Length: 426
Image (cartoon, rainbow, N blue to C red):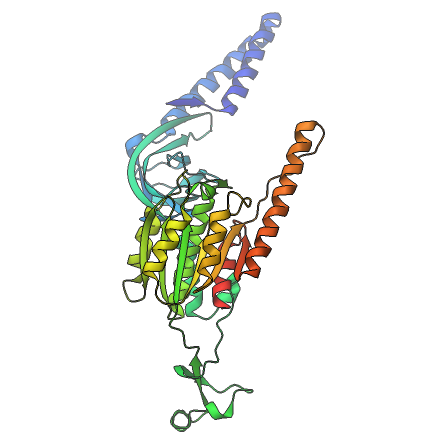
């Protein structure tokens, strides 16, 4: 496809104006004719200066697994196999359900060389998706015309929960710097379980100096004990209609899934047993609390399969299910939503019953609906309804706290941090 550029249209308009002027001033006929000839040969030269389709090779590179709701890097490798300079604009044919802050890239490719262009996409749904093509627009030397090619570069990628945040958490945990991500710093001070040895720091307890290691290394060495943990930590994810509503780019359930993945990593680091249950009208997925080398192969697949559904949630059935499966006292993180006393009566009853044997944390989203101005009767009624629902929700949260249910009010930006910090502080 040959596309005229703005520069050519401007020159063509100037030449047309000169031709009209030459009608009334014949003396301008020759200069106008020369200008038209020069423009014609410039366009012709521009046409032959542009690479042919087979002189440019395009390849897409990306991770096999993309992260839900996060910015994933996609790279396009361009190889110029000709002896001409190339100036290209690129746009990738990513799936329509993805979004990108800037998906148009510019790249200059010298002769017989290769260049890499990259952009970032944000998936809004889990599953397998295909990239089909890349559109490349090549400019001529004088930038008068351009040729546009479409390269078939088919590739597939699986969208999983936010693996990028998980890798970031694990990497910072390994160097004891998770506080830089907003998470609570690991606390030492247990009394019975040995963790590691480190150099003595002023203020350490003299009773914890390891004298054999001190004599061997010729400087004071302190014994660090870890807090003794062997608890059950279970994430209960409601995938019913209350969690299927959009909260920005993703559904509330998607944000909950991303938070659970990092929570699982935190539990593994603290040597706790971790499990999940996904439920709505029935129990969709259940992984019993466990730990071991196959931990993430057991947690990640059910989280990737789970999707929010527009159906009623049976909290009583979920409670009966847990009574049979969880014999040990556990820390339960319940990802669900409060609306009003009538709709949320079953959820409140389940949470109240669970507190008899478990430590319960309810994760609820803060509603950020824009307030109406209240200029007419309809807007005033809506404003009053919003205020009443907010007050009723706050009263329900206070009632649950009196019954022993701790409520974490989160939003899409801080849900992972608040959930993990609530666990680390328990």
